[in-house]
Amino acid sequence: MTKHYLHYLTNVMAHQWNDAALTDYGEEHEYTFGELAEQMIRLHVLFEQLGIKSGDKIALAGRNCANWAVAYLAIAAYEGVCVSILQDFTAEDIAHLLEHSDSELLFVGPYVWKDLQHQTMPTKLKAALSLEDWRPLYERKKSKETEAVHVPTKDEWEAAYKAKYPNTLKPEDVHFTADESALCLINYTSGSTGSPKGVMLNGRAISNNIEIGMKILPVDPGQRLVSMLPLAHMFGQVCELLYPLCSGTHIFFLTKSPTPSILLKALKEVQPYLVVTVPLVIEKIYKQKLDPTLSKWAIRMFWHTPIIGAFLKSRVKSGLRSAFGGKLRYFICGGAAMNPVVEKCLMDIHFPLSIGYGMTECAPLIGGNPPKYFKARSGGAPVSGMEVKIDNPNEAGIGEILVKGENVMMGYYKNPEATKAVFTEDGWMRTGDLGRLDKKKNIYIKGRCKTMFLGASGQNIYPEEIEDKLNNQTAVGESLIVEREGKLVALVFPDETLTKRMTFEEIQKIMRANLEKLNTLIPSYSKVSNIEVQEQPFEKTPKKSIKRFLYK
Image: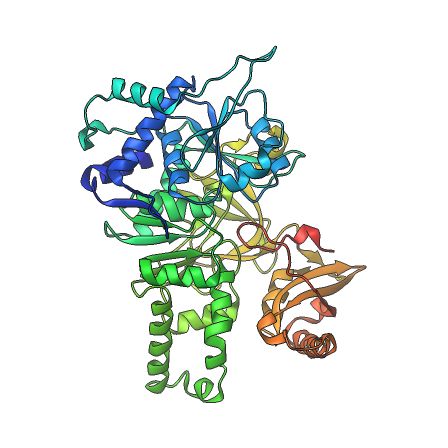
């Protein structure tokens, strides 16, 4: 029986009251678990003063920081509904999502508010509060339809808190709880102003994900973690905040967009037990740090020999662990497929790698294994509480992946058409991903239903498989396969570390050779007709996947 994650958080607070919980890296801002509890309760008092009720929507839009986590947890423990919005959306889109979600209160960071303040605020929104220090940035004025809203001053807020909690808060005073079956989160998968998809998740879905994390990646209290993924994205929210915090982890937030130098500095200083990231991060490290060494003739010759090979692999593993702080126990990737060459290297050196499979609609986990059980090229086996099956598989066992279980969303907020379309009549949710299962139910992703091409003779062509092979060719940074008039064309953004001193003609020559080699590695029905060099990097989603819909 799944327990609400607030149960675990309350228990950790009781046992680690004076231990550090949340820290803004490089800044003085830090909360112990006891101070986190007090801040949550203080916000509850503020909610009451503003007339916020259980079930009301409260939006969060800002960069990762300790106060983002405080606000999120306060909303959950108040039994409100958190509306988490990616700070990368445009101000116009964020204003639209505030309207669409019926949000009554907004916690917002300065980076977002800089542009958002010039938008018209929804009539239902009572106030906007700064994530820096909770000060009011916006208060609703009186109109024909609504009453004016007064956000309590700092003194008024403090007086209300003291009236309710006259004595110093103690661990035994804290009893956070919530209804597992109730809606607790609306997470928007895009900022579209058309028919946005606000994924509705209840406490059970999120709590089951957290229990899975505790089981697969057990933690010792007081261990540390660097939070680098967007907290408004389910991957970062669950894997870099809720699961570790409910296990007693001390979380350090990178409050600014991390450059490679800042990230590596933070990892060395914090020494995390866990790194959660997207494949692009480790692929860049591999190309810059490992590939120049591993591509040497002598290294390649002895890599698979019993004694010298084992020594070389041990040295590479030790150097990579050191780059991540030296205390790494788990290295978890998700959000996209990893380059197979990089993945094989990490498995060769017995790096603690595991690649999971999930989506926002499943809060987010569908598949995942502990590193020691991870199978190459897979997204893990179905996690506890989830069922996975393949719909209408072809002769190779490939079909659309369908899921059912505790993690699955309640539907899309105010979008019954999209909700109906994504569920089968017997309750399975369509993921939109193509894949197959092996005998142990490990999930192998072949691509998206929407991106699959149909060959001239009816063959299924998965562009992601071609891109995997192309990305391993000389001077290729990233690639994207598109279809034009029945032919496949590769769009390539070159690896600038290798090509920055080359002329365009020299790069073109390399790409012509790459094209020739690529077509020897793939079936004849999926041959690529041309490679086009892109002058700018591909536009990415927050989880660093290429926005395919922008390219034709």
